[in-house]
Length: 285
Image 1: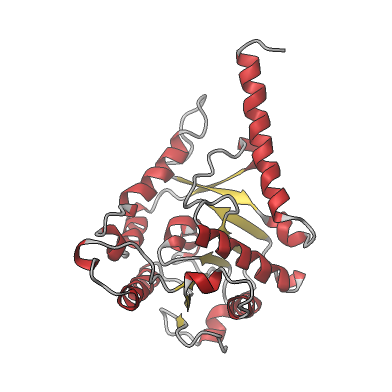
Image 2: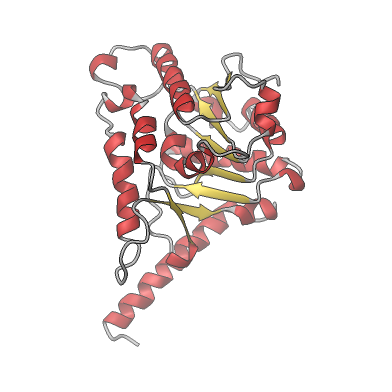
C-alpha cells in the first residue's frame, strides 16, 4: 500500500503483514485526531477485543500538531507534539489490541482542502483493502471544524468504494457535541459497559492532552454513564455505560442523498418533537 503522505504510519500491533491485517478487519473507525477513536468508537474496539474472528482497524487522519497543550508540554513545537501524539496513538492500539492502526499524518488544513486529492485517495485505498462490516465516523452535527472535515472526507471515500465492499452499517459518533438531542427512535445505543479497565487504559494513553488540562479521562466515561442513566425516565438503567450514535447507513446506500438535508431533517424532527411535547404540556391545541 502506497500512501500519499510520507509521514503516514501503518502499525500492526501483533506483527501481521499489513495486507493480511487489513483484510481481517470487521470494525473500522475513522477519527480526525489521536484519541478520537478511543472516545467515539470504543464500541467497535470492545466488540473486537480478544474475540476471534473480529478485528478493529483504526484510522487517524491528522498529525495532531495543532493540539492544545500546557504544563510539561507547553513549550513543545508542533512537530514535537505530533510525534508525541503519534506515539500515544500507537500505545492505545497496542493496549486495545487493534488489528491495524493507520495514522495518515495530514495537517488539519490539508484535510479541509477539497483540492488536495491525497487524503481521499489514501482513505479510499484503505477502505477497499479493509472492507469493514461496521464503520464509525464523526457525525455531521459535530461542532469541531476538523471533525466535520473528517466526516466529509470519510463520506466521499466510502461512496467511492464499490457498493458490495461498503460497510453494512455506518455510525456517526459523538465527540464535540452529544447526540442526546436525537429523537429516541433514531438513537443508536451502544452498550460499552463491562470493561471499564480497558476504557480507562485507552483514555489514559493520551497523557499529552490530559496533563494539558483536557480531562478526557473523566469526561468520556462521565458522558457514557450519563447516556445510560438518562436514557429513559420511566425505567431502571439497562446498561451501565452507553455511547450514542447516528445511523448514517442511508448515506452510503444511496449516493444521491444530500448529507446536509439528511442531517437537518434530523434536527427538524427533534424540533417537532419538542414543539409537540411542549404544546401538549401547556394544553395548547
